[in-house]
Image (cartoon, rainbow, N blue to C red):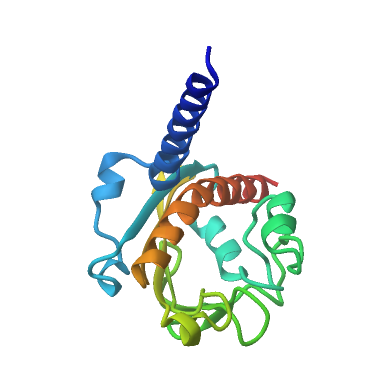
Length: 215
């Protein structure tokens, strides 16, 4: 095989692998019906450029899963992702909590804020907190520092957690991201990177929650 043929084959394999993980990043674990369903929070971004849906079935009812969601956040309960992910992407964050902490578990209400970085950086605002079934988080702050001023960058991001009881003691959990980013080059970069990364992050979160609700 010539060098050119090897390069073409390598590029084709890489492109195919990226297409697979990009598809997983948009849909892993979710059904067509779940992806088509209207959820609270969808109305906050009418024309998103990025939409991902991830789902899993957890072995505990929604009322036992919900408290874990109320303590999430930077230097709070974390996001229950694997520690290697935390070290790679959020090296300054604390390890995710492995127990429910009475000082962190709270009765979330619309308007509450959930930090996702050091003070003055990224955070989520609670839009909907319908315990134990729906949590909608909203952010316009997840941009690199100074990019709004330098590039006129803007971001609108809605993160919806839907919990539905299945069987006698399980939870079908759907996590949906809807986002819009400007300018176009930044939007393309976010979609190219965030969509595959969302598969890794969300599957890790599902595994982390499953380990905690079973313990």
